[in-house]
Image (cartoon, rainbow, N blue to C red; front, side):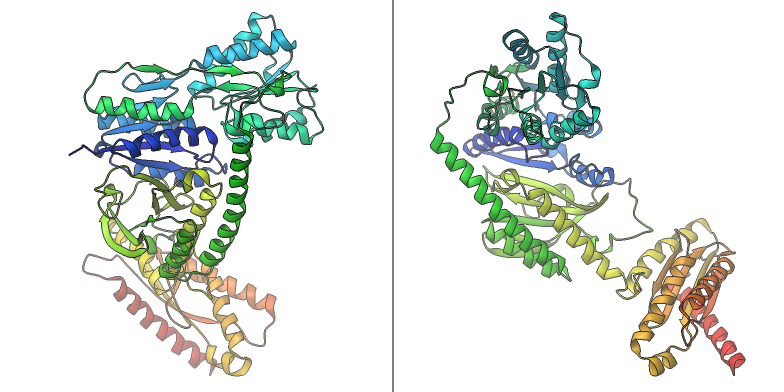
Length: 615
């Protein structure tokens, strides 16, 4: 029986052509050679939001690295050196063979590389000697990226060897993302510096958007300014004008990485570094004549396919967003996802959530610095060739709800989160959708947002916006247990709205709802950031706080808020409430329910006294 190789691959941002071509090479080789590839992928560094990125990067903490036979690392797709180094450290600790692209920093890893320095220097020298360029702008990649550094070093050396001084103000530090090209040109326009002879870009993705931005600003390429890239992507080869760039075998590099890794897994000796060929391609964007070898019919077919995928994708995305937005529970969320999966003809999909996902929305218990996955997961949706099922519980380190016994499978594991808060992940198997669709990132965010909203519905009161009974019991439980453990005073207050029946009978139930909402607002404003409040009945509220003085502080704030509301609204009735409390140091034999009952009894005494006083 042929051995099945299980390989983990780590990538960030699959929606660029550079990783797409490498991934396609990996996948085709894997399908033919009994390999299972599991991609742990994120879109970190794209939306420029640190909290969001923390949630994205959490996916790299999910796997047990040692459970795989080997690893493939697309480290140059990571803009964060912290995340990149964390992955590298985990692969090293696992003791598994690893292949990395364009990086010679890690002595224990094997790399697939081109000579970035030599080929970039050759391209820049061409601009100087053949086109007379003397003033340059450079759009670079991430500062700590090996490829980016080598290309920038080659650029600097080519200028220095020709007596050209480089103005550092003309350096823009990007992250290899398409949008960096736009931001680089915007930054240049704002600088009001004279137009350079050439914009040299560290990759095609940035070069193409930079060229488009220049052209939309009225500049002609190459008549007014030269633009060059690096990678020779499909879009660069078919741009107008055709991009001067560097050609390298991305697809072949992916296949070579798999071939090398299998040899290493089998214990065969291999060279630490495999050199792939690269050469400059001088085309229209630098002013050279260029005879395209592209099959025009193939270009038309590919362009048509991309356009149709975009139009169809937008329609499916809008449909999914609308369905997820109205989902009231996880079953309705699953229904929406299944409709989408059928539309894109995805045969295998698993929605994997942390076991207590319904309780993840919490202002008290969430540790936003904890980006690890809990031991247990649940899979409310497993979609397998039209068959729908659910798995109640499985270990998170297992990754998949059910064991994968066959070979030649390609899995994409993407994180589901809300900000830094982990909700889970999903797995798409044997579909190219995550790498060809421009909408995969947006769809992933929509699913995460929908799950977050459902979790809120489970613990938030829809009228008042504070916790309902379930939400209060969950979050107050953390406070109660903390006070038991450290032996500190705890205060529980029970609050009941006064005169609600009269308001409903006299002014209508809308006024009654307004009264309940207004009391809830006053309670929330009277609470501190670590206190917990909730509506546990029609007009009944509970608050829990720490310390012997909490009741006095809360009641003073609460009265102030009610007075402020009464003075501003000028209603024909007054907002009033009876408050009772108990303060004590709880022990292990006590329960939160007992404290609430005692506070309720104290509130009733206050209500009777207030009623007698009014009479």
